[in-house]
Image (cartoon, rainbow, N blue to C red):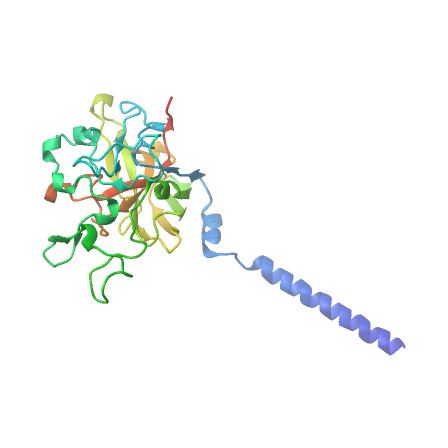
Length: 313
């Protein structure tokens, strides 16, 4: 009997020691590399930012959601229009636009003003094109030879035809409005930060790029300030969504976007841009000086994250 009790006690003690060792191992093992890095470097400043659905720069259904600060105020411009089947000019998007409206290319007058251009500088052949039908490159000379109904989805095209990924049906405002995202900005110091972007329900199997809109230089007079696009996080700044329209992107940067004084220009908003032509242009959002592909013709803001702005009054 004593031998039985002794053996049972030894078995219990052995089991407890094994559980204790496993517990210690689980506590000492890091959950993931990112968490370990963040803990070791410390956090100077951080914020989790939820997106708004954008239809342009500081533009939500034609309405400016933010005050960008002086001298810009509630300045905004659209990068999307509504396809106008009865004329050459796209219709503007407003809060009353139905979800069934088909989205199309556009160039907003406010954008032309800040770029010192007029409507005469816009190629009308690129206006009012449904986003699924924007011309793409099909040869080594960058000649736009395939667009419109000719650019079929892969299910309808031949085995070796030029085609676009499915879904390839027209993009509606209702689809566009489903997109959402969360951006986590973790600043370890004024010269070190990490961006963690997670997006959902965007356009499936499509190319997006992250960028920022900068305000003026701190030391420049207010009346001389200009807005400037910036490829935040370096190139490539791209993500391609999966079949659900989901995607993610992580980037390290050498300043803290949350602290306007950590660099010479304030980051006003961070944008997620849709490339309707299915190609990227390096460190710039579009090749405007080469062939006049202005914002709204091949590049369209889908999500916007407020950084150093206030709600519009």
